[in-house]
Picture 1 (spheres, rainbow, N blue to C red):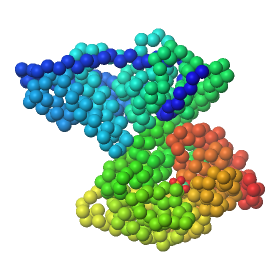
Picture 2: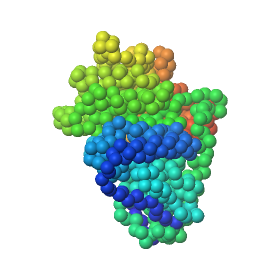
Picture 3: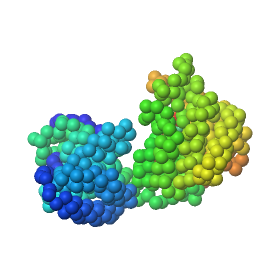
Picture 4: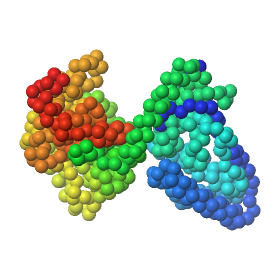
Length: 559
Ligand code: PEP
Ligand code: MG
């Protein structure tokens, strides 16, 4: 038994014979042309065919993996007719007298290199896309047929890397999983694998040797482990894991498009937490009702300097437009404590968790705050936006933050820049002070979202970063649950909604409690949406609500 480790990018266990992907080799012939116009026409004809083929692939992807996968090929269509790309090829053919194949090959290499050199990992992954589109055009020019699987039985497919078009063209019934030497979690192949529900592992490097071909292999897309020639115990254990996952997955799949409704007809919104625009696909795949927490600080963490207003605007706009009319709540920058960034030049603190962090930074650096708010309000014209402030303790902080929002809106209006008048403004309740003052705070904002990770830390005086605290850090503690109940009651008294966006929201042991308390929204990682929906649909609050509330009041709840 040999185990090699990669990065799991699409969960699930695949087991079967290993097969190396056969790629049709396109050798690029190079020669000087005399009739450049005729050569240009030859390229244009191949380009038109490629665009047509990509249209057909988009339809296949739509049927196999949904709209998002189809969009990928529509993007490839755009790439194939991109003006810069076309002009570069035209220059090589008409000025350098290169043949079409050489011109496409050189341009592809140049564009791929340019994408690969970009800082943003999403843009880096686009290098594979431009190569993919160009390979298609080259194939058409040289009359090469596409590669594929020559196996009759389903296999675990290994490759150095797989282009998205190769992935979608494969016969899905023959694929038990993907294992690639290169690739990243944000590559389109990984995205497609997740959308099609096929286990996938990337980045195994050269650990998969050609002599493993045909041997029995297990790929665990959750852990990233690839096991070659597993022993009987491992095989039995993994078979059990796979069956369990398949059973659960089948059940959960039937819940897509269904309501989050209890047996007695109570509904609750289930939204998602995300950290970057690329996470939206997971929200949509898992049928999240909206985004309850976009941790905007990840834009700052992924950047070498403060992201500009335009950079932020583009990121927010992308999330809002991709989410269509579903609600998107973006939290303003929550830096400090465990999330430190050098270029912020924050003073060294004895107790960073209780220091200058989150909204405290925004209020002490008005220009920094203003830049983010301008980007947010500009993006609000493209979807259904809510803005929320982290780490609130006092009413005056909220009033000052709202004043900044008003000032930014007035600026945009004066500049003739569109923004939505329907942006909800809310706060995170993640300090005991905010929970205790929630009766007053509720009249200042449109919603509350409880950050139970921090609320537990501050209420129980227990560092959330310190693993040694073990059971002392207990989000089920009645002090935390009582605060949540108090916040929900105060919110409802003032006519606003209350949600939970900390990890606790996805804790199925507490779903009944949250329903009893009257929580309006739970925002969880995308993968938790369907299990949570399942739990909500199994609950009958007529049976549990009063008992849970009594226990909470009497302190019997896990005291
Ligand atoms: C929380 O504190 O519960 C929360 C959602 O915010 P973060 O985990 O980003 O601090
Ligand atoms: Mg927090």
